[in-house]
Length: 82
Image (tube, rainbow, N blue to C red; front, side, top):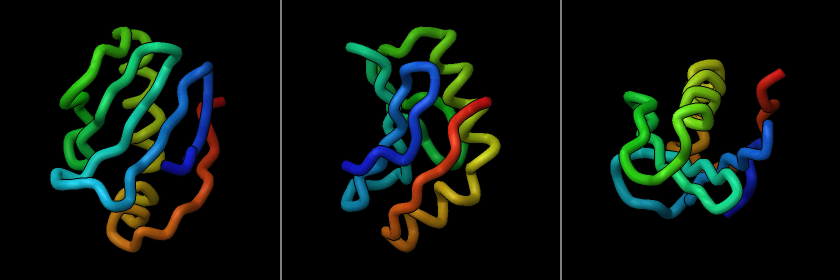
């Protein structure tokens, strides 16, 4: 699973052969979260509230690119939060 970006110790990854719903994964140390691309809500995982907020903020900025990656299965690196 390629790393799409990293920021504040959080890695964002996407399984291109994953199942529906469309989603991406966030990993922060030993914590993990799976986020739905449509709602940007964490649908599974144990990330801290602070990490969830950062991931959702980032995903809002790059939602279109994430959806395109999911549909085309073409990996691109995206910037992190600044």
